[in-house]
Length: 278
Image (cartoon, rainbow, N blue to C red; front, side, top):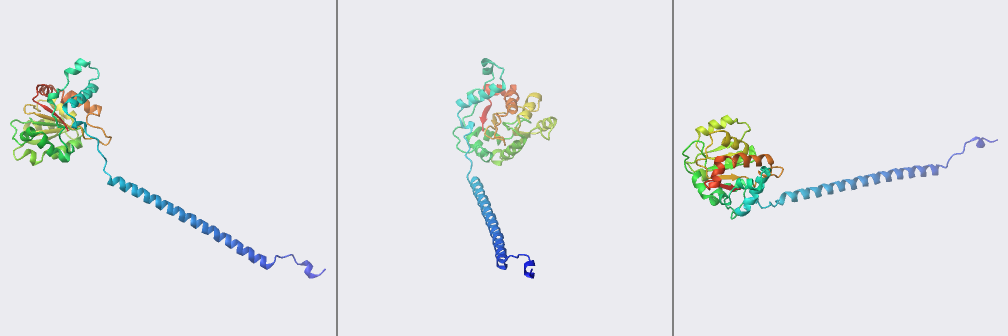
């Protein structure tokens, strides 16, 4: 046997080179496909991000349309609304009993001609134009301590603070008008408010129904001798879109201890106190 017969069979060198080239082409093709897929994914994400940004910008530029306030209705309809709210508070009363606590239509101020906003930025103008008697009285020096001409009922302490700042406007109180009392339970004890009212001449009292009710019903510091107007902050909605009379707790306090306080209710029935829905 020759030496050539002992040598193992070997692949042709050309075949080996060709195989290496094919392997390299496949790897390069895979990398290209992966890169293309990644670029396509990146562009898709960028496009989605741009679409969301445009949608967010559009939402910011379009102002939400506010639904008309219930307070914009005439007294003949407002009395029905108030009575329906009272029925929720006094749910165990009969129709006849409910009629005994109903607020007369004649004691509800007609503000249906007001075309402006019922937000705080126009509250001063609202009082000047729609409540001229109140405007005049707020600019006069009060005769007695703790006897406001206005009670403003708001649903929460923060809202009370905001309203108080607005009512201190010189266009309302002038140079002679009394102080504007800020009355809520948070951070203030009832005794502190009693002492404040007994030593201070006030033009207006702004407060939550809970604190106002306690001062009216449980103390002698809060006088209604000069009271001519009560404003219910029914157009304002909290973060949960609830109004003053939508919240059971505040609604009950409004009708039981504020409007329901004997000296206030008698004034409403006799027409010496007027109710305003803002």
